[in-house]
Length: 589
Image 1 (cartoon, rainbow, N blue to C red):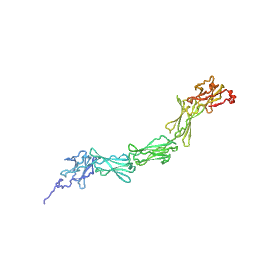
Image 2 (cartoon, helix red, strand yellow; image 1 turned 45 degrees about the vertical axis):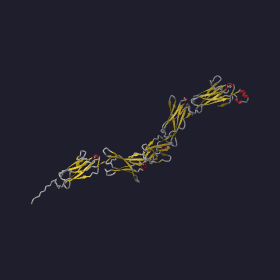
Image 3 (cartoon, rainbow, N blue to C red; image 1 turned 45 degrees about the horizontal axis):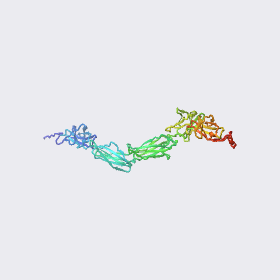
Image 4 (cartoon, rainbow, N blue to C red; image 1 turned 30 degrees about the vertical axis):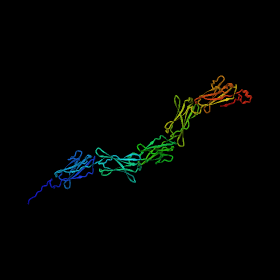
Protein backbone atom coordinates (compact mmCIF):
# COMPACT_ATOMS: atom_id res chain seq x y z
CA UNK A 1 0.00 0.00 0.00
CA UNK A 2 1.40 3.39 -1.09
CA UNK A 3 1.78 5.99 1.74
CA UNK A 4 0.32 9.57 1.12
CA UNK A 5 1.93 12.65 2.58
CA UNK A 6 0.53 16.26 2.96
CA UNK A 7 2.61 19.44 3.96
CA UNK A 8 0.87 22.39 5.80
CA UNK A 9 2.15 25.93 5.03
CA UNK A 10 1.02 29.24 6.67
CA UNK A 11 0.63 30.74 3.22
CA UNK A 12 -1.23 27.98 1.46
CA UNK A 13 -2.80 29.27 -1.68
CA UNK A 14 -6.09 27.65 -0.89
CA UNK A 15 -6.23 29.65 2.35
CA UNK A 16 -6.52 26.48 4.29
CA UNK A 17 -4.36 27.84 7.08
CA UNK A 18 -7.03 28.70 9.65
CA UNK A 19 -5.31 31.22 11.89
CA UNK A 20 -4.87 34.35 9.83
CA UNK A 21 -5.62 37.74 11.53
CA UNK A 22 -9.11 39.22 11.32
CA UNK A 23 -9.54 43.02 11.70
CA UNK A 24 -12.70 44.36 13.32
CA UNK A 25 -13.20 48.17 13.47
CA UNK A 26 -14.53 49.80 16.68
CA UNK A 27 -16.97 52.49 15.44
CA UNK A 28 -16.16 56.15 16.23
CA UNK A 29 -19.38 58.19 16.73
CA UNK A 30 -17.88 61.52 15.68
CA UNK A 31 -14.47 62.72 14.59
CA UNK A 32 -14.37 66.08 16.34
CA UNK A 33 -11.94 68.79 15.33
CA UNK A 34 -9.72 70.16 18.02
CA UNK A 35 -10.43 67.23 20.33
CA UNK A 36 -8.49 63.98 20.87
CA UNK A 37 -10.10 61.19 18.80
CA UNK A 38 -9.19 57.50 18.99
CA UNK A 39 -9.47 55.05 16.11
CA UNK A 40 -9.40 51.42 17.26
CA UNK A 41 -9.21 48.05 15.51
CA UNK A 42 -9.60 44.73 17.31
CA UNK A 43 -7.33 42.15 15.64
CA UNK A 44 -8.02 38.53 16.54
CA UNK A 45 -7.75 34.88 15.47
CA UNK A 46 -4.08 34.91 14.49
CA UNK A 47 -1.32 32.42 15.22
CA UNK A 48 1.57 32.52 15.84
CA UNK A 49 2.10 35.70 17.93
CA UNK A 50 4.02 37.57 15.24
CA UNK A 51 1.86 40.55 14.32
CA UNK A 52 2.94 44.08 13.29
CA UNK A 53 0.64 47.12 12.89
CA UNK A 54 1.41 50.37 11.02
CA UNK A 55 -0.74 53.43 10.29
CA UNK A 56 -0.96 55.50 7.12
CA UNK A 57 -2.79 58.57 5.97
CA UNK A 58 -4.01 59.41 2.50
CA UNK A 59 -5.05 63.03 1.97
CA UNK A 60 -7.93 63.94 -0.29
CA UNK A 61 -6.80 63.72 -3.91
CA UNK A 62 -3.47 62.08 -3.06
CA UNK A 63 -2.39 58.98 -5.07
CA UNK A 64 -0.41 57.34 -2.30
CA UNK A 65 -0.76 56.98 1.44
CA UNK A 66 2.07 58.02 3.72
CA UNK A 67 2.99 56.98 7.28
CA UNK A 68 1.33 59.15 9.89
CA UNK A 69 3.58 61.77 11.50
CA UNK A 70 4.55 62.33 15.09
CA UNK A 71 1.38 64.14 16.12
CA UNK A 72 -0.46 60.81 15.76
CA UNK A 73 0.04 58.57 18.78
CA UNK A 74 -0.06 54.86 17.92
CA UNK A 75 -0.23 51.87 20.22
CA UNK A 76 -0.86 48.10 20.10
CA UNK A 77 -1.87 46.18 23.16
CA UNK A 78 0.07 43.08 24.12
CA UNK A 79 -1.27 39.94 22.38
CA UNK A 80 -3.70 37.97 24.50
CA UNK A 81 -4.07 34.16 24.25
CA UNK A 82 -7.63 33.15 23.59
CA UNK A 83 -9.36 29.88 24.68
CA UNK A 84 -8.76 28.41 21.22
CA UNK A 85 -5.04 29.20 21.66
CA UNK A 86 -5.08 31.96 19.01
CA UNK A 87 -4.04 35.50 19.79
CA UNK A 88 -5.81 38.90 19.80
CA UNK A 89 -4.79 42.54 20.33
CA UNK A 90 -6.13 46.07 19.87
CA UNK A 91 -4.41 48.67 17.67
CA UNK A 92 -5.16 52.33 18.46
CA UNK A 93 -4.47 55.69 16.83
CA UNK A 94 -4.92 58.87 18.93
CA UNK A 95 -5.02 62.10 16.95
CA UNK A 96 -6.52 65.61 17.11
CA UNK A 97 -7.93 66.45 13.68
CA UNK A 98 -8.51 69.84 12.13
CA UNK A 99 -10.95 70.66 9.37
CA UNK A 100 -8.02 70.22 6.93
CA UNK A 101 -8.17 66.52 7.78
CA UNK A 102 -11.69 66.33 6.39
CA UNK A 103 -12.14 63.64 3.69
CA UNK A 104 -8.64 62.27 4.18
CA UNK A 105 -8.34 58.53 4.97
CA UNK A 106 -6.59 56.82 7.86
CA UNK A 107 -5.41 53.29 7.06
CA UNK A 108 -4.52 50.54 9.52
CA UNK A 109 -2.05 48.05 7.95
CA UNK A 110 -1.50 44.60 9.59
CA UNK A 111 1.38 42.23 8.75
CA UNK A 112 1.49 38.58 9.80
CA UNK A 113 3.49 35.52 8.61
CA UNK A 114 0.26 33.93 7.43
CA UNK A 115 -0.38 36.76 4.94
CA UNK A 116 1.06 37.06 1.47
CA UNK A 117 0.65 40.86 1.78
CA UNK A 118 -0.46 43.26 4.51
CA UNK A 119 -4.10 43.39 5.53
CA UNK A 120 -5.57 46.91 5.45
CA UNK A 121 -8.60 48.65 6.90
CA UNK A 122 -9.44 52.29 5.95
CA UNK A 123 -11.70 54.74 7.70
CA UNK A 124 -12.79 55.93 4.32
CA UNK A 125 -12.95 59.73 3.86
CA UNK A 126 -13.06 61.20 7.38
CA UNK A 127 -16.04 63.43 8.17
CA UNK A 128 -14.48 65.87 10.63
CA UNK A 129 -17.04 67.81 12.64
CA UNK A 130 -16.89 70.73 15.05
CA UNK A 131 -19.08 70.49 18.14
CA UNK A 132 -20.68 73.84 19.11
CA UNK A 133 -19.10 75.30 22.22
CA UNK A 134 -21.12 77.49 24.57
CA UNK A 135 -18.47 79.14 26.70
CA UNK A 136 -20.68 81.76 28.33
CA UNK A 137 -24.18 81.78 29.82
CA UNK A 138 -27.05 83.54 28.11
CA UNK A 139 -26.25 87.24 28.02
CA UNK A 140 -28.97 89.79 28.63
CA UNK A 141 -29.20 93.28 27.15
CA UNK A 142 -31.90 95.67 28.28
CA UNK A 143 -33.99 97.53 25.75
CA UNK A 144 -37.23 99.51 25.76
CA UNK A 145 -39.88 97.31 27.34
CA UNK A 146 -37.97 94.17 26.37
CA UNK A 147 -34.87 92.12 27.09
CA UNK A 148 -32.58 90.80 24.40
CA UNK A 149 -31.27 87.36 25.34
CA UNK A 150 -28.22 86.23 23.40
CA UNK A 151 -26.39 82.93 23.06
CA UNK A 152 -22.99 82.57 21.42
CA UNK A 153 -21.92 79.18 19.97
CA UNK A 154 -18.36 78.81 18.70
CA UNK A 155 -16.23 76.63 16.41
CA UNK A 156 -18.73 74.20 14.96
CA UNK A 157 -18.79 72.45 11.62
CA UNK A 158 -20.68 72.04 9.37
CA UNK A 159 -22.75 75.24 9.37
CA UNK A 160 -26.23 73.73 9.69
CA UNK A 161 -27.50 74.10 13.25
CA UNK A 162 -30.97 74.28 14.80
CA UNK A 163 -31.53 76.79 17.63
CA UNK A 164 -34.83 77.10 19.53
CA UNK A 165 -35.85 79.56 22.26
CA UNK A 166 -38.70 79.00 24.75
CA UNK A 167 -40.26 81.01 27.54
CA UNK A 168 -41.28 78.56 30.25
CA UNK A 169 -43.72 79.34 33.09
CA UNK A 170 -45.94 77.26 35.35
CA UNK A 171 -48.81 77.55 32.88
CA UNK A 172 -47.18 77.13 29.48
CA UNK A 173 -44.11 76.84 27.32
CA UNK A 174 -44.12 79.49 24.63
CA UNK A 175 -41.82 79.39 21.62
CA UNK A 176 -40.02 82.68 21.02
CA UNK A 177 -38.70 83.86 17.64
CA UNK A 178 -34.99 84.45 17.25
CA UNK A 179 -32.46 85.77 14.77
CA UNK A 180 -29.03 84.26 14.06
CA UNK A 181 -25.85 85.94 12.91
CA UNK A 182 -23.15 83.57 11.58
CA UNK A 183 -19.42 84.13 11.39
CA UNK A 184 -16.70 82.11 9.64
CA UNK A 185 -13.41 81.51 11.40
CA UNK A 186 -9.92 81.27 9.92
CA UNK A 187 -10.00 77.49 10.18
CA UNK A 188 -13.33 77.39 8.24
CA UNK A 189 -15.33 76.55 11.35
CA UNK A 190 -18.42 78.60 12.16
CA UNK A 191 -19.78 80.68 15.00
CA UNK A 192 -23.26 81.98 15.59
CA UNK A 193 -24.95 84.56 17.86
CA UNK A 194 -28.61 83.86 18.44
CA UNK A 195 -30.79 86.70 19.75
CA UNK A 196 -34.24 86.40 21.25
CA UNK A 197 -36.33 89.30 22.57
CA UNK A 198 -38.44 88.73 25.70
CA UNK A 199 -41.10 91.31 26.77
CA UNK A 200 -40.28 92.99 30.12
CA UNK A 201 -43.68 92.02 31.53
CA UNK A 202 -42.85 88.31 31.17
CA UNK A 203 -39.87 88.70 33.53
CA UNK A 204 -42.00 90.17 36.31
CA UNK A 205 -42.93 86.57 37.13
CA UNK A 206 -39.94 85.21 39.06
CA UNK A 207 -40.77 81.63 37.99
CA UNK A 208 -40.38 82.32 34.27
CA UNK A 209 -37.33 80.74 32.64
CA UNK A 210 -35.87 81.55 29.24
CA UNK A 211 -34.48 78.38 27.66
CA UNK A 212 -32.43 77.96 24.51
CA UNK A 213 -31.65 74.56 22.89
CA UNK A 214 -29.43 73.68 19.94
CA UNK A 215 -29.00 70.55 17.84
CA UNK A 216 -26.04 69.79 15.57
CA UNK A 217 -24.92 66.64 13.77
CA UNK A 218 -21.77 66.54 15.90
CA UNK A 219 -23.84 66.06 19.04
CA UNK A 220 -25.42 62.95 20.49
CA UNK A 221 -27.89 65.01 22.57
CA UNK A 222 -29.19 68.60 22.27
CA UNK A 223 -27.37 71.33 24.16
CA UNK A 224 -29.24 73.83 26.26
CA UNK A 225 -28.93 76.79 28.60
CA UNK A 226 -31.45 78.55 30.82
CA UNK A 227 -31.79 82.02 32.24
CA UNK A 228 -34.06 83.22 35.03
CA UNK A 229 -33.99 86.51 36.89
CA UNK A 230 -33.25 84.65 40.10
CA UNK A 231 -30.06 83.15 38.68
CA UNK A 232 -27.01 83.94 40.73
CA UNK A 233 -25.42 85.82 37.84
CA UNK A 234 -28.47 87.97 36.99
CA UNK A 235 -26.95 91.46 36.96
CA UNK A 236 -29.93 93.73 37.67
CA UNK A 237 -30.91 93.14 41.25
CA UNK A 238 -31.81 96.19 43.35
CA UNK A 239 -29.05 97.96 45.24
CA UNK A 240 -30.04 100.00 48.31
CA UNK A 241 -28.03 103.05 49.23
CA UNK A 242 -28.87 104.96 52.39
CA UNK A 243 -29.07 108.74 52.26
CA UNK A 244 -27.37 109.71 55.54
CA UNK A 245 -29.43 111.58 58.15
CA UNK A 246 -27.09 113.64 60.35
CA UNK A 247 -29.50 113.83 63.27
CA UNK A 248 -32.81 112.24 64.25
CA UNK A 249 -34.40 115.09 66.17
CA UNK A 250 -37.26 114.61 68.60
CA UNK A 251 -40.38 116.64 68.00
CA UNK A 252 -39.31 117.55 64.46
CA UNK A 253 -40.19 115.91 61.14
CA UNK A 254 -37.33 113.61 60.12
CA UNK A 255 -36.99 111.89 56.76
CA UNK A 256 -35.23 108.58 56.23
CA UNK A 257 -34.38 107.97 52.58
CA UNK A 258 -32.97 105.08 50.59
CA UNK A 259 -31.97 105.34 46.94
CA UNK A 260 -32.78 102.03 45.22
CA UNK A 261 -31.14 101.54 41.84
CA UNK A 262 -29.91 99.08 39.25
CA UNK A 263 -33.05 96.89 39.12
CA UNK A 264 -34.93 95.35 36.22
CA UNK A 265 -37.79 94.75 35.51
CA UNK A 266 -39.86 97.59 36.98
CA UNK A 267 -41.61 95.48 39.62
CA UNK A 268 -40.34 96.77 42.97
CA UNK A 269 -42.23 96.97 46.25
CA UNK A 270 -41.03 98.74 49.41
CA UNK A 271 -42.33 98.26 52.94
CA UNK A 272 -41.21 99.74 56.25
CA UNK A 273 -40.94 98.04 59.64
CA UNK A 274 -40.02 99.07 63.15
CA UNK A 275 -38.34 96.99 65.82
CA UNK A 276 -38.52 98.40 69.33
CA UNK A 277 -35.63 98.02 71.74
CA UNK A 278 -35.70 94.50 73.21
CA UNK A 279 -38.38 93.25 70.78
CA UNK A 280 -37.84 89.92 69.02
CA UNK A 281 -39.76 90.77 65.86
CA UNK A 282 -40.23 93.83 63.71
CA UNK A 283 -43.73 95.11 62.94
CA UNK A 284 -45.08 97.30 60.12
CA UNK A 285 -44.90 101.02 60.89
CA UNK A 286 -48.19 102.64 61.91
CA UNK A 287 -50.10 105.58 60.49
CA UNK A 288 -48.01 108.35 62.03
CA UNK A 289 -45.18 107.26 59.73
CA UNK A 290 -45.71 108.67 56.23
CA UNK A 291 -44.17 106.48 53.53
CA UNK A 292 -43.61 107.22 49.87
CA UNK A 293 -41.79 105.77 46.87
CA UNK A 294 -41.01 107.92 43.87
CA UNK A 295 -41.97 106.67 40.44
CA UNK A 296 -39.29 104.46 38.92
CA UNK A 297 -36.97 106.38 36.62
CA UNK A 298 -35.28 104.77 33.62
CA UNK A 299 -31.52 105.19 33.72
CA UNK A 300 -29.10 105.46 30.76
CA UNK A 301 -28.28 101.74 31.14
CA UNK A 302 -32.07 100.97 30.94
CA UNK A 303 -32.27 99.85 34.58
CA UNK A 304 -34.63 101.57 36.99
CA UNK A 305 -34.14 103.61 40.13
CA UNK A 306 -36.39 105.16 42.75
CA UNK A 307 -36.23 106.75 46.20
CA UNK A 308 -38.11 105.35 49.20
CA UNK A 309 -38.84 107.79 52.02
CA UNK A 310 -40.19 107.58 55.55
CA UNK A 311 -41.33 110.78 57.25
CA UNK A 312 -41.82 110.60 61.01
CA UNK A 313 -41.66 112.75 64.12
CA UNK A 314 -39.87 110.77 66.83
CA UNK A 315 -40.05 111.13 70.58
CA UNK A 316 -37.40 110.06 73.07
CA UNK A 317 -39.38 106.82 73.46
CA UNK A 318 -38.25 105.91 69.94
CA UNK A 319 -34.62 105.94 71.06
CA UNK A 320 -32.71 102.73 70.23
CA UNK A 321 -35.57 101.29 68.17
CA UNK A 322 -34.73 100.28 64.59
CA UNK A 323 -36.43 101.30 61.36
CA UNK A 324 -36.12 98.75 58.57
CA UNK A 325 -36.62 99.30 54.83
CA UNK A 326 -37.62 96.04 53.11
CA UNK A 327 -37.39 95.74 49.32
CA UNK A 328 -39.01 92.98 47.25
CA UNK A 329 -38.21 92.30 43.60
CA UNK A 330 -38.75 89.30 41.30
CA UNK A 331 -34.96 88.84 41.04
CA UNK A 332 -34.67 88.22 44.80
CA UNK A 333 -35.24 84.92 46.57
CA UNK A 334 -36.09 86.87 49.73
CA UNK A 335 -36.54 90.55 50.55
CA UNK A 336 -33.55 92.85 50.76
CA UNK A 337 -33.38 94.81 54.02
CA UNK A 338 -31.58 97.88 55.29
CA UNK A 339 -31.81 98.89 58.94
CA UNK A 340 -31.03 102.22 60.55
CA UNK A 341 -29.58 100.34 63.49
CA UNK A 342 -30.64 101.57 66.93
CA UNK A 343 -31.93 105.12 66.44
CA UNK A 344 -30.15 107.79 68.44
CA UNK A 345 -32.95 110.30 68.97
CA UNK A 346 -31.65 113.71 69.94
CA UNK A 347 -33.20 116.96 71.09
CA UNK A 348 -31.75 120.16 69.66
CA UNK A 349 -31.39 122.98 72.23
CA UNK A 350 -33.92 125.77 71.69
CA UNK A 351 -33.10 129.37 72.61
CA UNK A 352 -36.47 131.10 72.58
CA UNK A 353 -35.42 134.34 74.28
CA UNK A 354 -32.43 136.69 74.02
CA UNK A 355 -29.84 136.96 76.76
CA UNK A 356 -31.54 138.40 79.83
CA UNK A 357 -29.75 140.99 81.96
CA UNK A 358 -30.10 141.37 85.74
CA UNK A 359 -28.26 144.20 87.53
CA UNK A 360 -26.25 143.53 90.66
CA UNK A 361 -23.75 145.46 92.70
CA UNK A 362 -20.95 146.49 90.34
CA UNK A 363 -21.81 143.64 87.95
CA UNK A 364 -24.39 142.40 85.50
CA UNK A 365 -25.76 138.86 85.49
CA UNK A 366 -26.33 137.67 81.91
CA UNK A 367 -28.55 134.61 81.60
CA UNK A 368 -29.36 132.26 78.72
CA UNK A 369 -32.13 129.66 78.79
CA UNK A 370 -31.90 126.57 76.53
CA UNK A 371 -34.86 124.20 76.37
CA UNK A 372 -35.78 120.63 75.37
CA UNK A 373 -32.47 119.08 74.43
CA UNK A 374 -31.22 115.50 74.70
CA UNK A 375 -28.87 114.02 75.79
CA UNK A 376 -27.85 116.13 78.78
CA UNK A 377 -24.23 116.83 77.83
CA UNK A 378 -23.88 120.34 76.47
CA UNK A 379 -21.00 122.78 76.30
CA UNK A 380 -21.76 126.45 77.03
CA UNK A 381 -19.10 129.16 76.74
CA UNK A 382 -19.33 132.87 77.57
CA UNK A 383 -16.85 135.46 76.30
CA UNK A 384 -16.49 139.22 76.55
CA UNK A 385 -15.40 140.64 73.19
CA UNK A 386 -13.79 144.07 72.69
CA UNK A 387 -11.57 145.60 70.02
CA UNK A 388 -8.48 144.53 71.92
CA UNK A 389 -9.26 141.01 73.13
CA UNK A 390 -11.71 138.20 73.65
CA UNK A 391 -11.87 137.23 77.28
CA UNK A 392 -13.50 134.03 78.50
CA UNK A 393 -15.94 134.46 81.36
CA UNK A 394 -16.87 131.81 83.94
CA UNK A 395 -20.47 130.63 84.14
CA UNK A 396 -22.75 128.41 86.20
CA UNK A 397 -25.45 126.10 84.84
CA UNK A 398 -28.69 124.93 86.41
CA UNK A 399 -30.29 121.91 84.73
CA UNK A 400 -33.92 120.81 84.76
CA UNK A 401 -35.52 117.56 83.56
CA UNK A 402 -38.80 117.70 81.65
CA UNK A 403 -41.68 115.24 81.66
CA UNK A 404 -40.56 113.72 78.35
CA UNK A 405 -37.02 113.16 79.77
CA UNK A 406 -35.53 116.02 77.77
CA UNK A 407 -33.45 118.64 79.55
CA UNK A 408 -33.33 122.39 80.04
CA UNK A 409 -30.54 124.60 81.34
CA UNK A 410 -30.12 128.16 82.57
CA UNK A 411 -26.57 129.44 82.18
CA UNK A 412 -25.55 132.54 84.19
CA UNK A 413 -22.47 134.64 83.60
CA UNK A 414 -21.49 137.71 85.66
CA UNK A 415 -19.87 140.63 83.82
CA UNK A 416 -18.16 143.45 85.78
CA UNK A 417 -19.90 146.82 85.40
CA UNK A 418 -16.65 148.44 84.29
CA UNK A 419 -16.51 146.18 81.19
CA UNK A 420 -19.84 147.59 79.95
CA UNK A 421 -18.64 151.18 80.08
CA UNK A 422 -17.07 150.51 76.71
CA UNK A 423 -19.96 150.67 74.22
CA UNK A 424 -18.13 148.36 71.80
CA UNK A 425 -17.95 145.47 74.23
CA UNK A 426 -20.17 142.49 73.36
CA UNK A 427 -21.11 139.64 75.63
CA UNK A 428 -21.35 136.44 73.58
CA UNK A 429 -22.56 132.99 74.59
CA UNK A 430 -22.04 129.87 72.47
CA UNK A 431 -23.31 126.35 72.91
CA UNK A 432 -22.39 123.05 71.29
CA UNK A 433 -24.50 119.90 71.41
CA UNK A 434 -24.26 116.60 69.52
CA UNK A 435 -27.63 117.30 67.87
CA UNK A 436 -26.20 120.37 66.12
CA UNK A 437 -24.12 120.67 62.96
CA UNK A 438 -22.85 124.12 63.96
CA UNK A 439 -22.60 125.89 67.33
CA UNK A 440 -25.47 128.13 68.43
CA UNK A 441 -24.81 131.62 69.73
CA UNK A 442 -26.36 134.83 71.01
CA UNK A 443 -24.85 138.24 71.70
CA UNK A 444 -25.67 141.13 73.97
CA UNK A 445 -24.34 144.70 73.90
CA UNK A 446 -25.59 147.76 75.73
CA UNK A 447 -26.39 149.38 72.40
CA UNK A 448 -28.79 146.58 71.45
CA UNK A 449 -32.23 147.86 70.63
CA UNK A 450 -33.79 145.87 73.47
CA UNK A 451 -31.19 146.83 76.12
CA UNK A 452 -33.41 147.77 79.09
CA UNK A 453 -31.20 150.29 80.92
CA UNK A 454 -31.03 153.30 78.63
CA UNK A 455 -31.40 156.72 80.23
CA UNK A 456 -34.95 158.05 80.76
CA UNK A 457 -34.92 161.90 80.66
CA UNK A 458 -37.65 164.11 82.17
CA UNK A 459 -37.73 167.92 82.51
CA UNK A 460 -39.97 169.73 85.00
CA UNK A 461 -40.83 173.32 84.01
CA UNK A 462 -42.48 175.58 86.62
CA UNK A 463 -44.75 178.55 85.81
CA UNK A 464 -42.42 181.27 84.59
CA UNK A 465 -42.93 184.94 85.52
CA UNK A 466 -41.23 187.90 83.98
CA UNK A 467 -38.18 188.95 85.99
CA UNK A 468 -38.78 186.23 88.68
CA UNK A 469 -35.99 183.65 89.27
CA UNK A 470 -36.92 180.11 88.22
CA UNK A 471 -35.33 176.66 88.12
CA UNK A 472 -35.67 174.06 85.34
CA UNK A 473 -35.08 170.54 86.66
CA UNK A 474 -33.99 167.59 84.46
CA UNK A 475 -34.01 164.11 85.96
CA UNK A 476 -32.09 161.29 84.23
CA UNK A 477 -33.00 157.81 85.53
CA UNK A 478 -32.74 154.07 84.67
CA UNK A 479 -29.05 154.38 83.77
CA UNK A 480 -26.56 151.54 83.74
CA UNK A 481 -23.56 151.56 83.78
CA UNK A 482 -22.64 154.62 85.82
CA UNK A 483 -21.20 156.67 82.96
CA UNK A 484 -23.26 159.72 81.96
CA UNK A 485 -22.72 163.29 80.90
CA UNK A 486 -25.23 166.07 80.29
CA UNK A 487 -25.45 169.72 79.31
CA UNK A 488 -27.99 172.48 78.83
CA UNK A 489 -28.58 174.11 75.46
CA UNK A 490 -30.64 177.20 74.58
CA UNK A 491 -32.42 177.38 71.23
CA UNK A 492 -33.35 180.84 69.88
CA UNK A 493 -37.02 181.19 68.98
CA UNK A 494 -36.43 183.21 65.83
CA UNK A 495 -33.20 181.89 64.30
CA UNK A 496 -33.36 178.35 65.65
CA UNK A 497 -29.69 178.61 66.55
CA UNK A 498 -28.51 176.72 69.63
CA UNK A 499 -25.97 177.79 72.24
CA UNK A 500 -24.32 175.71 74.92
CA UNK A 501 -25.00 177.16 78.37
CA UNK A 502 -21.75 177.34 80.29
CA UNK A 503 -23.36 177.86 83.70
CA UNK A 504 -22.02 181.32 84.51
CA UNK A 505 -23.41 184.84 84.30
CA UNK A 506 -27.20 184.84 83.86
CA UNK A 507 -27.42 181.04 84.20
CA UNK A 508 -26.40 178.82 87.07
CA UNK A 509 -26.23 175.04 86.74
CA UNK A 510 -26.15 172.47 89.52
CA UNK A 511 -25.75 168.70 89.03
CA UNK A 512 -26.77 166.16 91.66
CA UNK A 513 -26.15 162.39 91.76
CA UNK A 514 -29.26 160.76 93.11
CA UNK A 515 -27.35 157.51 93.66
CA UNK A 516 -28.13 153.82 93.21
CA UNK A 517 -31.80 153.02 92.93
CA UNK A 518 -33.56 149.90 94.33
CA UNK A 519 -33.33 148.24 90.91
CA UNK A 520 -29.56 148.97 90.87
CA UNK A 521 -29.82 151.58 88.13
CA UNK A 522 -28.42 155.10 88.54
CA UNK A 523 -30.26 158.49 88.60
CA UNK A 524 -29.08 162.07 88.21
CA UNK A 525 -30.62 165.58 88.45
CA UNK A 526 -29.46 168.78 86.80
CA UNK A 527 -30.97 172.23 87.55
CA UNK A 528 -30.80 175.34 85.36
CA UNK A 529 -31.42 178.49 87.43
CA UNK A 530 -32.12 181.79 85.66
CA UNK A 531 -34.38 184.86 85.71
CA UNK A 532 -36.71 184.69 82.71
CA UNK A 533 -37.83 187.81 80.87
CA UNK A 534 -40.42 188.26 78.19
CA UNK A 535 -37.91 190.01 75.99
CA UNK A 536 -35.19 187.29 76.19
CA UNK A 537 -37.04 184.06 76.84
CA UNK A 538 -40.55 184.28 75.44
CA UNK A 539 -40.82 181.34 72.98
CA UNK A 540 -37.24 180.27 73.61
CA UNK A 541 -36.48 176.58 74.16
CA UNK A 542 -34.13 174.90 76.63
CA UNK A 543 -32.74 171.44 75.86
CA UNK A 544 -30.96 168.99 78.10
CA UNK A 545 -28.58 166.70 76.18
CA UNK A 546 -27.48 163.33 77.64
CA UNK A 547 -24.65 161.04 76.54
CA UNK A 548 -24.41 157.41 77.75
CA UNK A 549 -22.60 154.26 76.43
CA UNK A 550 -25.98 152.64 75.71
CA UNK A 551 -26.94 155.28 73.11
CA UNK A 552 -25.05 155.78 69.89
CA UNK A 553 -26.09 159.44 69.54
CA UNK A 554 -26.78 161.98 72.31
CA UNK A 555 -30.32 162.04 73.68
CA UNK A 556 -32.10 165.40 73.96
CA UNK A 557 -35.12 166.50 75.98
CA UNK A 558 -36.71 169.87 75.33
CA UNK A 559 -38.85 172.18 77.44
CA UNK A 560 -40.71 173.23 74.36
CA UNK A 561 -41.30 176.95 73.69
CA UNK A 562 -41.34 178.80 77.03
CA UNK A 563 -44.32 180.89 77.95
CA UNK A 564 -43.41 183.87 80.19
CA UNK A 565 -46.22 185.43 82.17
CA UNK A 566 -46.37 189.05 83.41
CA UNK A 567 -45.13 190.29 86.77
CA UNK A 568 -45.89 187.93 89.63
CA UNK A 569 -47.54 190.62 91.77
CA UNK A 570 -49.91 191.57 88.97
CA UNK A 571 -50.99 188.02 88.55
CA UNK A 572 -51.32 187.59 92.33
CA UNK A 573 -53.75 190.51 92.62
CA UNK A 574 -55.85 188.86 89.94
CA UNK A 575 -56.37 185.82 92.17
CA UNK A 576 -53.55 183.53 90.86
CA UNK A 577 -52.70 182.44 94.41
CA UNK A 578 -51.34 179.10 93.19
CA UNK A 579 -48.46 180.88 91.51
CA UNK A 580 -46.74 182.03 94.68
CA UNK A 581 -42.95 181.55 94.73
CA UNK A 582 -43.30 179.35 97.79
CA UNK A 583 -45.57 176.93 95.92
CA UNK A 584 -44.64 177.02 92.21
CA UNK A 585 -46.64 174.91 89.77
CA UNK A 586 -44.75 172.33 87.70
CA UNK A 587 -45.68 170.41 84.62
CA UNK A 588 -44.03 167.31 83.17
CA UNK A 589 -42.82 166.96 79.58
